Image 1 (cartoon, rainbow over the protein chains, first blue to last red):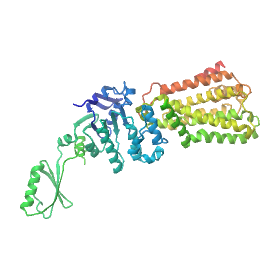
Image 2 (image 1 turned 180 degrees about the vertical axis):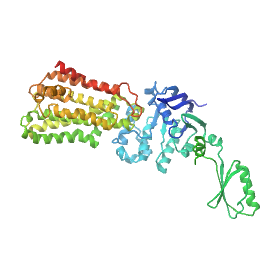
Image 3 (image 1 turned 120 degrees about the vertical axis):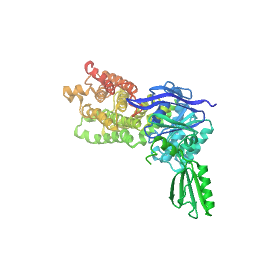
Image 4 (image 1 turned 180 degrees about the horizontal axis):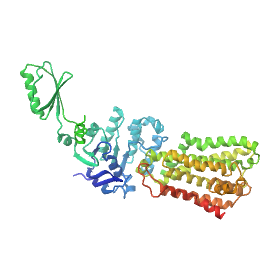
Length: 303
Length: 269
């Protein structure tokens, strides 16, 4: 069993009378990518900020790499890397200077190779404000990992980035994971969370409402599997199939929402063959993490 | 030491790269120096005697009060301090290094003014160079301390401008730069003694330029020194990393304690 790099027990955070985080507990194993999901105001940022040592909790216990983020804040600095949502760098600093500057405070050799690997080689002497959003994010990631931290916190790392940059950042995250780094990923991007995370926690109104692998979370829902079928003829028109709760016809496709994929598909294929019709296309889409997230947070009902 | 040097080098370059800082550190003081040098001796010939100390003190006021606080407030508002905290950069470095780099810019500007004023405007040079340098450094320390303190306690950029101008404008009017301290009415003179510019001009006149001081020049140096150290201490004490996290160790009004040495000086010197 892998050791826990992050342990959160009964963690509680309030701002005046407002309860931002209400006695949550979870742990993150060594080398795991852990996604922290939730709508705005769910308590993700408060949780991250307390784990990073930026704020003090009001109750419970937090351990990051075996240390208390408040009491051992100074020692923790070299063990964690944080890519903040806003890059948090002065406008006039260049990537070269930023790398030297942060590396010096972490007492490590500057990792200019990271700038090269993240496609910033040509911008090493450009000032921060001259970099695109994607370049700023990549620089923030390079700085967050330059001192080889054990735990990396990523807050919306790919928000607003183009596809190519997202792929580069995802590759870097996988490389970090394969090197034994633990990553905490706070994101609104469900596809990213599903694709990258080993486990996710869904937060809602300061509480954790689900923790598990993306597969476990999506499988546990009441979500329906979507079956889209296109045939040459009209054999499927006005015909009821088992376990189908809803039927639509759109863009020449019959779309079925099924609670039992096996029974529904078997019956659909049998109907097409029995009618002498020809199957042109058949697609099956399991409920995504996003569907499950919307179901849990209650916003799915509105859509 | 390595970290300090990288931080210092970056901050010093920022003082030139950043257009606002370039203006406050160099263009405004040197432009004002040239303008005053050409105009004032023609209107008021005795001003020539005071040209070097007055314009050097003006340079200090411009680079510190108008240059230091706003970048500090901006950095806090834009999460730069949060990023620094996460990366183990101490608050002392955040506060002291911009002040030290500004002092280096001030040395350059002060040297340009002192070296060119005798040739351009027939201004007399200091008679006691050691005292001139000591007073210059002490005034720089006092104003840098106050400026850092304004940056720490200001809740926003708009308020920063207000606090800075509350010291800058009276310093220009009453600090002895344009008008001798002796020409001020008694009550205005007492108020002027609360300003670092008045103390610096008094000390420069009495100890460096061969003129006479209106009150104890050594008392002025002491007040500047104590106020500067006190201001830095208060800035470290009142420092907050985050504009969203408003918890701080003391009330911002504690910053007024930085003026205490000048207030005591009114009665002692």
